[in-house]
Length: 117
Figure (cartoon, rainbow, N blue to C red):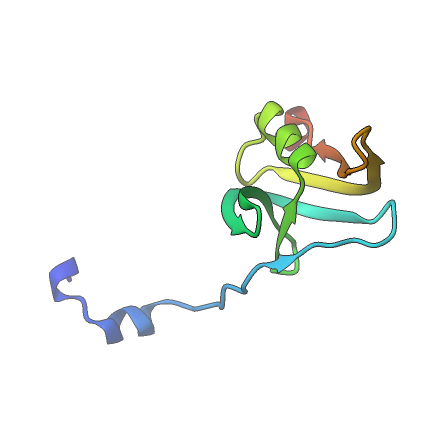
Protein backbone atom coordinates (compact mmCIF):
# COMPACT_ATOMS: atom_id res chain seq x y z
CA UNK A 1 0.00 0.00 0.00
CA UNK A 2 1.45 3.36 -1.00
CA UNK A 3 0.82 6.65 0.70
CA UNK A 4 -1.57 7.58 -2.12
CA UNK A 5 -3.60 4.39 -1.51
CA UNK A 6 -3.79 4.93 2.27
CA UNK A 7 -7.10 6.17 3.59
CA UNK A 8 -7.93 7.94 6.81
CA UNK A 9 -9.59 4.73 8.06
CA UNK A 10 -6.44 2.71 7.29
CA UNK A 11 -4.32 5.04 9.39
CA UNK A 12 -6.88 5.11 12.20
CA UNK A 13 -7.00 1.31 12.37
CA UNK A 14 -3.26 0.64 11.91
CA UNK A 15 -2.05 2.48 15.01
CA UNK A 16 -2.66 2.67 18.73
CA UNK A 17 -3.47 6.26 19.63
CA UNK A 18 -2.86 8.39 22.69
CA UNK A 19 -4.03 11.89 23.44
CA UNK A 20 -1.52 14.73 23.65
CA UNK A 21 -2.50 16.85 26.64
CA UNK A 22 -2.53 20.63 26.53
CA UNK A 23 0.42 22.11 28.42
CA UNK A 24 -0.13 23.28 31.97
CA UNK A 25 1.68 26.20 33.54
CA UNK A 26 4.03 25.11 36.32
CA UNK A 27 3.66 27.73 39.04
CA UNK A 28 5.18 26.37 42.26
CA UNK A 29 4.34 28.14 45.50
CA UNK A 30 6.86 26.55 47.87
CA UNK A 31 10.59 26.98 47.49
CA UNK A 32 12.22 23.63 46.83
CA UNK A 33 9.35 22.38 44.64
CA UNK A 34 10.72 20.28 41.77
CA UNK A 35 9.63 19.47 38.25
CA UNK A 36 11.34 16.38 36.80
CA UNK A 37 10.96 15.16 33.26
CA UNK A 38 12.36 15.58 29.76
CA UNK A 39 13.23 18.88 28.08
CA UNK A 40 10.71 19.60 25.32
CA UNK A 41 12.30 22.72 23.90
CA UNK A 42 11.39 26.37 24.27
CA UNK A 43 8.33 28.08 22.85
CA UNK A 44 7.66 31.74 22.22
CA UNK A 45 4.40 33.05 23.62
CA UNK A 46 2.74 36.46 23.59
CA UNK A 47 1.92 38.12 26.91
CA UNK A 48 0.72 41.51 28.04
CA UNK A 49 4.31 42.82 27.90
CA UNK A 50 5.15 41.27 24.51
CA UNK A 51 6.81 38.04 23.43
CA UNK A 52 8.51 35.77 25.94
CA UNK A 53 9.98 32.27 25.98
CA UNK A 54 8.87 29.33 28.09
CA UNK A 55 10.60 26.03 28.74
CA UNK A 56 8.55 22.91 28.00
CA UNK A 57 8.93 19.83 30.23
CA UNK A 58 7.34 16.43 29.53
CA UNK A 59 6.85 14.32 32.66
CA UNK A 60 6.80 10.54 32.98
CA UNK A 61 3.06 10.55 33.70
CA UNK A 62 2.37 12.12 30.30
CA UNK A 63 1.80 15.72 31.38
CA UNK A 64 3.40 18.68 29.64
CA UNK A 65 4.35 21.79 31.61
CA UNK A 66 5.45 25.23 30.49
CA UNK A 67 7.74 27.16 32.82
CA UNK A 68 8.48 30.85 32.38
CA UNK A 69 11.36 32.91 33.69
CA UNK A 70 14.15 34.77 31.94
CA UNK A 71 16.74 33.26 34.26
CA UNK A 72 15.50 29.72 33.50
CA UNK A 73 15.51 30.24 29.74
CA UNK A 74 19.06 31.60 29.91
CA UNK A 75 20.25 28.59 31.92
CA UNK A 76 18.72 26.21 29.38
CA UNK A 77 20.15 28.08 26.39
CA UNK A 78 23.63 28.44 27.88
CA UNK A 79 23.66 24.77 28.90
CA UNK A 80 22.89 23.61 25.34
CA UNK A 81 20.28 21.21 26.72
CA UNK A 82 19.22 18.87 23.91
CA UNK A 83 15.53 18.23 23.36
CA UNK A 84 14.43 15.02 25.08
CA UNK A 85 17.19 15.21 27.70
CA UNK A 86 16.32 14.43 31.36
CA UNK A 87 15.93 17.66 33.33
CA UNK A 88 15.14 18.69 36.90
CA UNK A 89 13.97 22.23 37.73
CA UNK A 90 13.81 23.40 41.35
CA UNK A 91 11.97 26.59 42.33
CA UNK A 92 14.15 28.83 44.51
CA UNK A 93 11.80 31.78 44.93
CA UNK A 94 12.24 35.36 43.83
CA UNK A 95 15.35 37.52 43.76
CA UNK A 96 14.71 41.16 44.69
CA UNK A 97 16.37 43.46 42.15
CA UNK A 98 17.77 46.90 42.88
CA UNK A 99 14.96 48.57 40.92
CA UNK A 100 12.31 46.93 43.13
CA UNK A 101 11.33 44.26 40.60
CA UNK A 102 11.49 40.53 41.30
CA UNK A 103 13.13 37.86 39.16
CA UNK A 104 12.21 34.15 39.29
CA UNK A 105 15.07 31.92 40.42
CA UNK A 106 15.46 28.27 39.45
CA UNK A 107 18.10 25.63 39.95
CA UNK A 108 18.44 23.53 36.79
CA UNK A 109 19.99 20.09 36.72
CA UNK A 110 20.40 17.89 33.66
CA UNK A 111 21.37 14.24 33.50
CA UNK A 112 25.09 13.76 33.01
CA UNK A 113 25.50 12.35 29.50
CA UNK A 114 27.85 9.66 30.90
CA UNK A 115 24.99 8.29 33.03
CA UNK A 116 22.74 7.89 29.96
CA UNK A 117 24.88 5.28 28.22
